[in-house]
Length: 262
Length: 262
View 1 (spheres, rainbow over the protein chains, first blue to last red):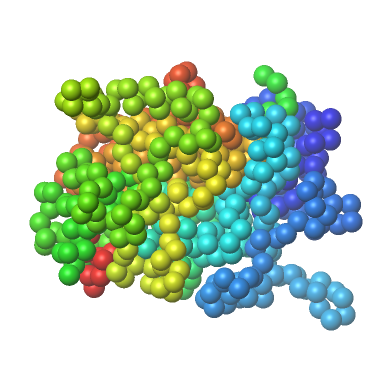
View 2 (view 1 turned 180 degrees about the vertical axis):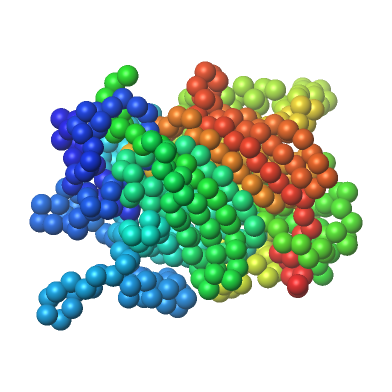
């Protein structure tokens, strides 16, 4: 049963759904280690098919698609990166691009033992923190593009009016949230299931509400179970530095969250 | 005009409203430094009076009052700390307690130049990140108690179902958010207007959704404009350690956010 669940495991950063965990043995999947963030490797990302494993709907909504709340600046950067992604040419052949857009959902899959403090009713209502507000543009509008060869990713992020900290500016916690999300997506992409072990964030300049920024994340190094990621948050023209961060993720098994007992 | 606005400045962590910025000269208030977090010192916190400076309503709601979403565990810890706060005795005299509960609102005050990327309509809808969801219990339920003499504070935090990261567990960004909020409240309480300069967070153990935890923040040291705060997140009986963090805040002027031009 656990193996069955593990095969159906969705992303914990809401970026991906995948049908398998390549490079990880069932025993690793059933490890009793504690963990928070699980991620797939790129190879395991697959589009929703007729045999979708999404437990809530046959067509989960990808929240990282353009919508009417996106500013022209957000849309332009998105279009620029889309232009660098794989495309289907007219004759049906795939044209290779260095970038790939990751989808983003509003939760991962149902969990077995998680949410032990919540009623079943409330558990079913749980949603990914960054996708929990339905009002488009109100909180986190973001899309992540990965570059496999260069082992890095870029997130285009538009900060909505419900993310306020200082008057008219984005809350430090909201910035930490998108940094955790983006660095965790890259770490999971490169190393498989992981959890955040450390975030070290230097806030260099306040970010006005409504800003569109780029979150650049890159692999620093991998040492055994540890994946080190660096991160910079800049204006879209990269002239202004808002935030710098490092993040450490540790590779983990997935059994614990899905019912394995200590 | 700026001095007028500065006098009306509300908390940037939504904990406080105050009528003045003691120990800060008007020139300092008009400094052009950049900044994100502003906080009052304890002396400047005053209850809403008939001459309330709250710009939206004469009776802003204190979101850190008990509500029906609070679990018995949350309520019990709250009651324990309330019992250690100042109380009015029967003969009308104040009985001193070592702790003080801080109120918490869903935004600070209107801002002059902030939100430059937002329309006026959207600016008016801006809300504090930690208080932006109306559904009680869905996101951040929290209350901060400060102990002036010991230069520390404790936040009782119940993590709602919309804060999900890993299935059934609290998102690392949500934990970072409440840590930024609580350490920033303490730093501002001790040092006046400040902004977050660094957050360094070690995630020790995953936190199940619905958990009630304590966020203990204490002053490490103050060096000129730098206020260093330490932080631990534990279970309510303090037997389990979820997270450890350090935070650095720098004292700032308040002019920039309110219209001072570079």
